[in-house]
Every structure is written in C-alpha cells, then in structure tokens.
Length: 144
Image 1 (cartoon, rainbow, N blue to C red):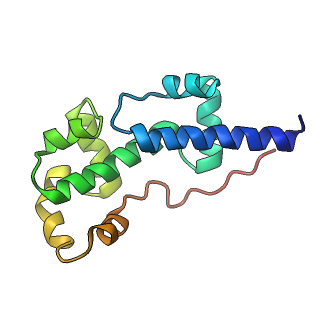
Image 2 (image 1 turned 180 degrees about the vertical axis):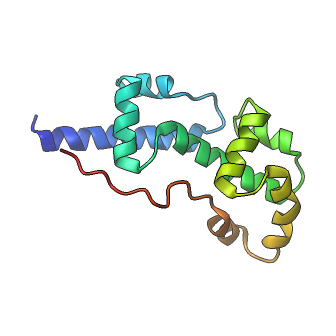
C-alpha cells in the first residue's frame, strides 16, 4: 500500500470516528473507546484527528455537546443540570466551565438571554448563528 493509499484509509477511519462522535455525543465516549473502535492507539488517534480536523477528539466531542446544550437551553424547558446530563456530561462543573470557555457566558446566563436573542428566527438559522466555534484559528498542519 502506498503512503497516499494509507493516508486515504486513515482519513476514512477518522471520518468514521468523527461521525460516531456526532451521532453518539450523549453517550459515554472517551478517546480510548474511540481508538479501540478505530483499531488505533489513543495517542495515534488523537494526533491524527488533530491533524485532520484541527482539534482533539475530546475537544470535538465537547464542542458537539455544547452545541446541543445551547439548543436545549434556547428551548427553555430544561434546567442547566438537566441539559448537562442530557448531552452526556457527568459533571456539572466541567460542563459549566467548558460551556463558558466556548460560548463566552455561563449556561445559566445563556439560558436567560438565548430565547430573546433568537426570537423570531427559524431554528435552523438560529442553530447556525449560535454555533460555538472552538478553533477559529485552527490551521491545517502540513504532513511530513
């Protein structure tokens, strides 16, 4: 197998890992479990994932969880704690810290202001406009 063929195979595997995170974000996922499913070591998966997508598998998972949490908080019918557990986080403190890092305000502050911010905007547009962007400065890392 040529290096080009190997790289294409690796990218297919990494896309499957990313798809699994997108699909199963609310399930207990960790890098070791994702790596086992991809038949890679956790370290190799993390390095390759970061090279391909600009962030670690864990960072990508948390971004997906926070994105879903933002949607649930905009609805307004769940508490911050309920949202935390609904998106797969097991620690309210970690959830709140990560939410604040990505969104810029705490989950409770977001919940108070979010409904007014997107009022009258279709849900599909609100999701795109309010989507957290973790690595705006992420650049493609050249492969050697």
